Image (cartoon, rainbow, N blue to C red; front, side):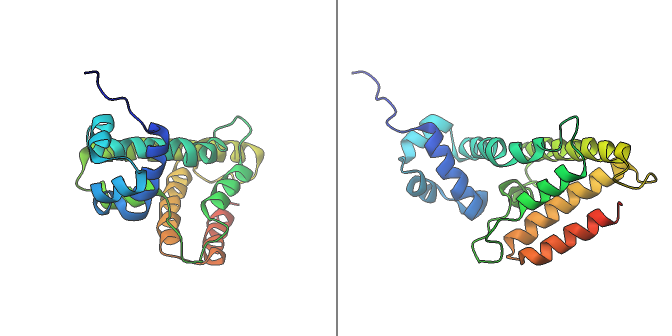
Length: 194
């Protein structure tokens, strides 16, 4: 008897798992929830991803590649400056912000839930946050050379500050804060550099 073939798309299952983890968190997304949301039976999920943690890590990688990559890469170019930072923050605030369906950022939500007690996830979070901070450093360095920010601004400190601001915005998005309030906070933070 030959082994059974997988009869589902791994990519589709991962995308549906992203939504489940994004909505419920790692601990709140039970295997029953994941089975229901992915449409894949428990045996196949375990056979493909090893365990819930394997599926979660795959979901985080997928989320980062699809939701974060395009946004952060705006700030990594040779010509990236303040306009790319503004575009990054604008993209963090969805068009329906304040409508009651906000999920925030999967990585920020997961950092809050897991990073304190989970060394493996902490490493994943560190890579995510370091990349974000490096992108801010790049764009701010270019902005400083162009005279878009004050000459006395310390680029590394500002990059760390904007990384923290990004995480705070992610939390406030999840809490349902109005887009106008979030934009005001971001605008004020960026104005202090000019």
